[in-house]
Image (tube, rainbow, N blue to C red; front, side):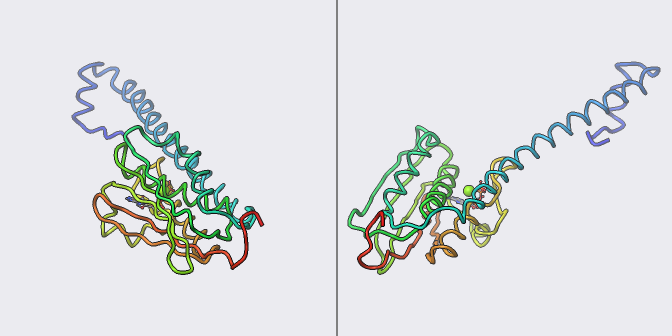
Length: 221
Ligand SMILES: Nc1ncnc2c1ncn2[C@@H]1O[C@H](COP(=O)(O)OP(=O)(O)OP(=O)(O)O)[C@@H](O)[C@H]1O
Ligand SMILES: [Mg+2]
């Protein structure tokens, strides 16, 4: 039986119900325990499936969002409005925006998904207390968006695998391991940008680099 019954357990059951009823009792207990285990498996499976459905929705959005010239801060603020409810009281949110940045040409909805995924990871790494910092800046022909947290950091043995699809260190039902895979596809494949990670205990930063829009192109065009 899957529940971990052993001779000692059988003896205990026998002591309670008597030898005559042992078989019936064991039959019933087996049924109950198996049902219980099954329910737990179902529960886990449901958690896993709903995570996958969420991720599938993100993948399916990939080709729909329109390409437009936008101010990166608009996308960041729109995302912050969406995630605000998820930010625990013990987490301080710091914004340092370089308002002189030029616009970028982007799939806006997809980039918002990237910020959501990175902020989500930062928040879950901090688990309730810390500082989430969002900084923007310029690096040559690229706009940079850095999302930092004060969580425990990414262990060296985990670091090479974080962008792999389905790689997660989170318990079943909490993570599907697709957040960074999706983000990488959006930034690197679709926007010809880059994502870099710098992590040590207390300071993890994901830096997204995006090409600035061609000269003379204005937001909204
Ligand atoms: N800011 C961070 N601090 C520490 N570890 C991180 C951070 N961001 C990502 N990781 C590690 O990278 C793994 C993969 O991240 P990814 O976003 O792809 O998946 P996930 O968060 O586990 O699940 P999902 O995003 O699909 O819900 C995480 O499970 C975690 O171990
Ligand atoms: Mg994630």
